[in-house]
Image (cartoon, rainbow, N blue to C red; front, side, top):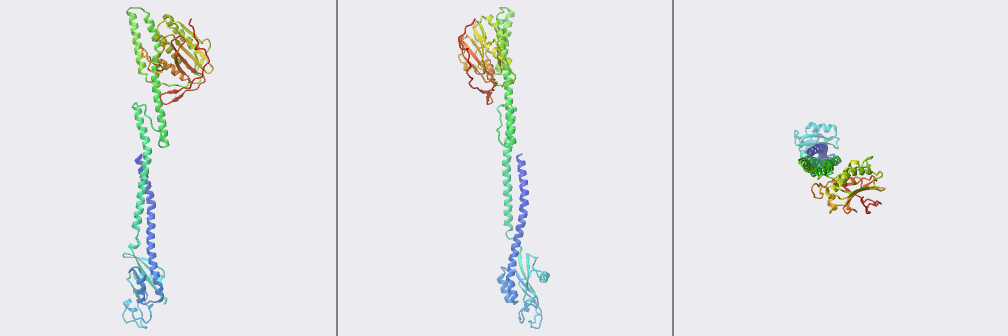
Length: 490
C-alpha cells in the first residue's frame, strides 16, 4: 500500500508538471524570440530617420555603425534613389563603373553584409511591411523604410540564433528543478501518508497474530485514519470478548466443579459412618479420589477472571424458599453430626434479582465450608433480612472463625487446608456484586464466622473497570434490622 501510494503520487505529479512546464517553456521561448526581434526593430527604427534625409553612403555607414550593436545590420537602397551628383554612389552597386554622371542610371546602394535572399528583399520592398526570414545561423528582420524620393529602402537586421535562445537554458533548468522538487515533495508526502496508513494496519496484523498465538493481552492502539481507528476499536472489543469468554469458561468449569463438593461432602460423611470393612474402605478411597480430581479441576481453572454480569429483566428467585430448601438438605447432615441449626426470616417470600441456581451454589458453598472447617457439633445459623432496597443473608457459625477475612475473599487462595480451593467465597462475592452489593466477613454472635451477603434490589448494575472484571462497589446503605443482636439456638 505504501509503495502504491508513492507510485500514484509520482505519476500524478509528473503529469501535472509536464502539463504546466511544457507550455510555460514554450511561452518563455516565444518571449525570448519576441525580445530579440523587438531589439532588431529598435535598431532598424534608429536608421529610418537618416534614410528619409539622405542616401549618402558615408553618412549611412556612420548611422548604421552607431545604431547597430554589432555587424548584423545592412541597408538596401534601390537604384535611382541615390543623391544626384554623388560620384561615389555608384561604387556600392558594383555596376559598370562609369562614375555616375547626372545623365547615367544610378546603381543600387547596399551597406553592410547582406544575408537575406534578393527575392525576400524585393518582396518586402514590394509589400511595404516588415518580415522575417530564416538565414544560416539565425534570422533576419527586413524593415521597409520610405525615402524622400518615394522609393522604398530595406533595412536588414540580423538576429543570431544565440540571441533568440538567450536565457532559455536557464529557464528550462529552473522549470526542471521545480518539477523535480515537486515530484520529490510528492513522494515524501505520499510516503508519510503511506506510513500513517500502513503502520496501524501492520500493528493490527501483528496483534491479530499475537492473539491467535494465545497472547490475550494483545491490543491495537486506536490511531491512524478513521477506518483503521474503527478497525482497531472493533479488534480490541473482539479481544476483550475473547478474553471474557475464556474467563467465563474457566469460571464455569471451576464453579461447576466446586458445586460437586456438596454431594461429595455428603458422600464423605456417609462413607465415614459405614464402619470398617473392605467395601467401606473402597467407598472412602473412591470418595477421596473423586474429591482430589474435583480439586484438580478447580485449581486448573483458578486463574479465571471474575465476571459480574448484570441481572436480566425477569431473572430472580425467592430467597426464603431457596434457604428453606437448602437447610432441609443440610439439616440431615447436621443432625448426624450433632450440630444445632437455626433458620430465621424465611416465613414470607423474599424476592431477589439473583438466579435460583446461583443462590443455591452460594449457600451450598458457605454451608459446605461450615461442615468442612468446623468440628462436629458446631452450631450454625442462616438469617434472611428483607429491607426496602436490599436483602441480607447471614450465614454464621460457632466455630473458630477466619483469621484473615481479606485473604479469604481473594479468589483461589483459600484457607490452606486440605480440600480448600478458595473458590467458595468467590462464588458468593460474585453473586452479591452482580446486584451492586457486596460480601463481608466478620465475627458472629455465636462466636465464630459470620458471612454477610448484601443483595441490592434497585436493579443498578455494578460499574466495570479494566479487563479484569473488577467492580467498583458503592457503599451499601444501612439496612435497619436486628441481625447483630444476640441469638439463642434451640
